[in-house]
Image (cartoon, rainbow, N blue to C red; front, side):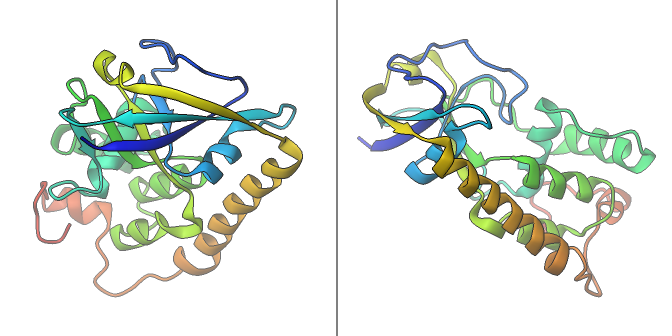
Length: 225
């Protein structure tokens, strides 16, 4: 048995998360989005005009099907393709359209049978990094480096009905926006600043770009990935 402490940032107290409720256009589709970090939950809980709550749960994932996008066998392109399938990208440019089609064909991860999904949280900064990659602006190496700028957060998504049954509510902590909104905004600014000032301009000879992935028809498991 593996018992985890998870937090969900919200504008309300959520004692009983409801299966099948939410936005299907989120990063990993429909689900209940949590984090193991109380600090991140506090930042995600507040809005510009609202305070929030960091809801705390105990979660038992033993025997459940868990898809972890940082596990062996998966790479950043699998994560990126999941975003392409679920969220709205600016893919009007011919290269971006070709990249989207190719990645969805070869790197798509079917989450229909997953009970739990773990991976990066694609806030505005991560979304910018991913979009720059499919536009050919940054290399695969730069994308991987950018994903770790600013400690923008990992998330655990509860997907299935049986996984929802494993969530045990413990408490809700009040989160004032006066404290946590500036912290969230500063974390995002730090990631963007590091990206544009340091990572985005650091092209290296031999870097792998989306054009090469397409031209050489690279697939999951390719040594270059």
